[in-house]
Image (cartoon, rainbow, N blue to C red; front, side):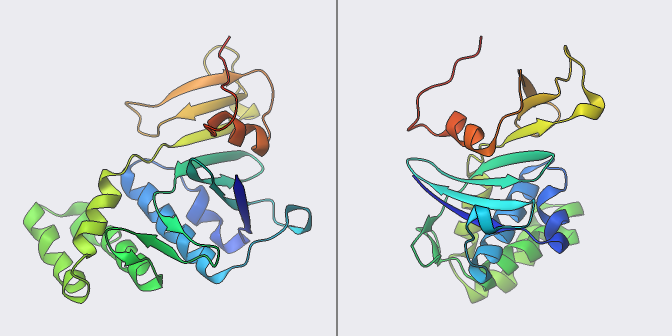
Length: 206
């Protein structure tokens, strides 16, 4: 397993720690994570002064782990990445700053958020597909991917031993699908990674 860690500066807190409610939020986090890794250098954890960090874990699974003092969460990272932090996908080739900006621009556009029809949305894509003919395939890949969202929460303010344990996993993010697994003690980031890493021994619920 390889793990690369990046400090998350204060001005980027809202990017990575706003509530996740829908697939659009996950895709924006993925795009902004790539942007951050393209312009930043990995840090040694013992040298990192920031309490918030982004970790790219490469093993049999490829995942992002995004960590703060209060909570951490993980999503699948469905892209190829080399040792120089160049990002690729079979659908579009290189994922660079332009591609990530285009995706974010579309997802933040009113046509996508409140558009009345699929045709309005497709018309809005023409600017991007004219520039990159594989762009629609890439966007479709993002919406069809299994994002694997899991959040590790430490919530003493709302703690309830039956309904809302202080330490718990939140599985999925939409209100109709999300459910919790209570934990007896606080789990470290290493423990969080071990729970999800399919190369490690399986954990049991007792």
